Image (tube, rainbow, N blue to C red):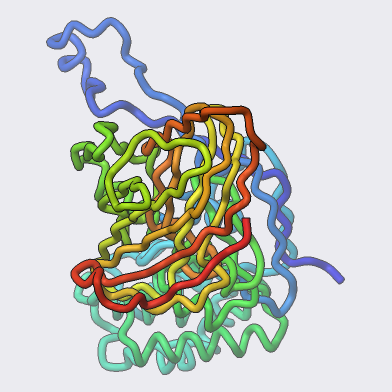
Amino acid sequence: MTVPIRVVGLRKSFRRKHMLNPGTLKEAFVSRLRRFDSSEEFLALDQVDLEVRQGEIVGVIGRNGAGKSTLLRLIGGVGLPDDGQILVHGKIGALLELGAGFHPELTGRENIFVNGVISGLTRAEVAHRFGDIVAFSELEESIDNPLRTYSSGMQLRLAFSISVHTSPDILLIDEVLAVGDLAFQQKCLERIEHFRRKGCAILIVSHDIEQVKTVCDRVIWLRDGKIAAFGEPQGVVDQYERAMLLETERRRHADVPARRTRTGRELRIDENRKGTMEMEIVDVQLQDIRGLPIAELKKGKALVVVIAYTTRKTIRSPIFSLTISDENGETFLDTNTEQLDMPDIDQDTVANVHLERIDLPAGDYFVDVGAYAQNWGHVYDYHWHVYPLLVAADAKRDSSLHTPPRWELLPANAQDREPVIEDSNKV
């Protein structure tokens, strides 16, 4: 079976000028710049492989500037790739840019004939389909008015109607459906489904994630010109949304001054701290069996780690973790609440982790703590090598831990009440 769209190793770059580049000779002379070309290469697409089969709808998602529109334009024949192959079999119908190919001084009627011929129809074929094009666009009363009098939604109606009445084997749609009203969007989606049933290969760029999940058979996620994921819609969309959430939270915290912990160490995003911060670890204290803060512990003694969390919204059954490791990253204890029946967290909370006996070789260690989404979906907050623990020993003893940790979860303002959960994990 012939594959309508096959893209292999596609690479496309552009030249991007710096903001301070001179735009004229006069500006260059005045600013005394010796170099006129301070531009740099911007890689829009890098080693992209893609197939769209007959009767398949493939969605393309990604943030602005990821290369989505460039991909559609190259497949549609607008521009040439720097490297790689684009193999297209069949007539293409494309909506790559609202108003592309339209002339504002021509009437809707005249623009139908011009665009129909550009799309590969003869004038006679356009005349034969003219009534259907106008009826679908619902522009009967405005068809003889100049296009400059049309709203963006009316232009979309006309452009989409022309495109789908050229009987394409391949349909390329770049975000323009978002311009139309809901009723016309639904009409367009029904026509797209009609083409899919007839075997048309359809590639849609959209920021409407719900629409992508509903209508697409597969989804490609472009990130910085490369394929980050390609496959079943729900799985790809979930990955994309998690990545966007992480990126948003990182930007939100990027300008926040580093916070110092009780140990005097600074917490810095992407250095010793990471996560979305939907739930934050606001305090960590190492205590002895009497509840007194400590930085040094004798070998064989008990340790209690008190971790305070805060959240701005309800967190569904989070996973809390605690790790003890040395300076080289070797882990001696790794415990978490994954197997516990964790409640939803909607208030400030304290977790007490009881270690009845620490049997580690004398030396310097770190207590690392984290909070994660259900099923380890993503990190809310993780602190790495921030809380030091010095283990001192009187005599040589076994160098491994022999104590099951016990987790105790309490509301932050009611530590004397009964714990929400209390259970143990195996080491």
